[in-house]
Image 1 (tube, rainbow, N blue to C red):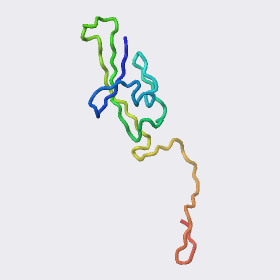
Image 2: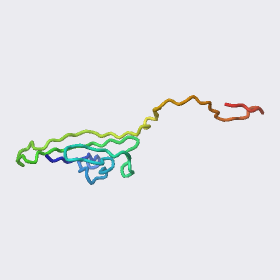
Image 3: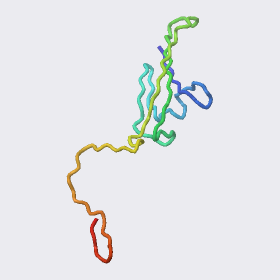
Image 4: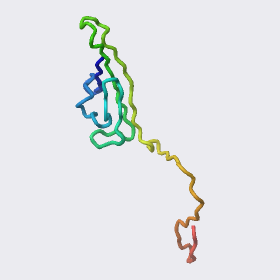
Length: 117
């Protein structure tokens, strides 16, 4: 069986080969012959994935030893791969408890006397 990967090019309204495209190696680090996709661990700058980016992917699986004239020798699977920055919704998650600490934000003068806030 052979496996070919495509991405949806919205500007040209067509499926384009994913290998050797701008998405190759970023964010798709490895696309193997059995349909396994390995993603890169960070945005390397060639494709902007932040704050949220969706890549429409199509994988074509072809049975190589079936006669060429047999129309159902290739099947397709289509799905979205969504990349989302953790803080894109302006929300930060606390990973561990923070110890109680006394904070002094600043000091200002009101009517000639020092006051802590």
